[in-house]
Length: 404
Image (cartoon, rainbow, N blue to C red):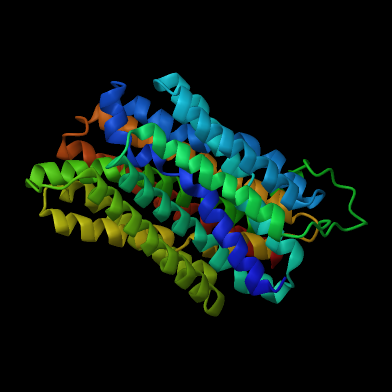
């Protein structure tokens, strides 16, 4: 299989695997009414998805240094099918939703970075660097497709069918990987005696740690945004008197995710052509400024809010592939799986905390119907980029001093 064909296949598979990604976020306002959820409880369900990812990713991604990533991928997408079917049939409130969204997070852990490892194990170094931004940007495409399909289906059918069809799409992903991707042993250094689940060497790689920290703050902000953007647009439409349905709002969320795809590729391209640290720093700085403003502008004309929210999405995603590319480039031979595992553990730990912290701030600052509440919620969100920026620059400076 040619590098381009393999890349396209993995991107299609990732979009199918992520069909369930935004199911809860896109339907969050409905579930809050249906199950009488508080903002904090909604934040827990939104965040537990990433907790599942964090718990599973050290094992599932760490093993790709010694086990064919295809095997990890196939097992994990099977877990995703079970999770979506279970939610469709058995979810009836806070605790059951937590269980099945946790399982969905495990499925993402075993498909996203293991999919990247499928590419890494089958491509040359040059092809790998060219393919990486496109594969990573497929995450935004998968997010957009999940938001759009969820909104479209929910406007026409009962919510269980949304999750049922997500399971069907994930089953199609499983069949695609089984039938098109050839099996292969991972590229393991014979001289390495590191246990595949020993992550200590990763933390001696200071440059990799710097980009992992940056990715943590990025993910905190990104996944908080994606968990709460539909609810925020519902608020903005209500206060401006705009008559708009849930399908259209989910469509806006899908467009915001699509904006992230070229933004991520462009950011990675600029990072390769210019100084990676400086490129990431500029993007993060602008993201902080927009994020701290957006919530307080919720009472502005609805289309103004939509435009600023779309711009914010673009800048949040502008450093995504550049950060992961920095981690991949810094990873040592024989430790790439372990390094990506830690990249994912830290990053998606931020992804777990982001939605939860926004929900807590909303509850403490006036709720989903308060302009001040949303203003402070988005400040809380943007704090992810601020912490990422400070930590990334500080850690890279220390790494440079040590190397010198």
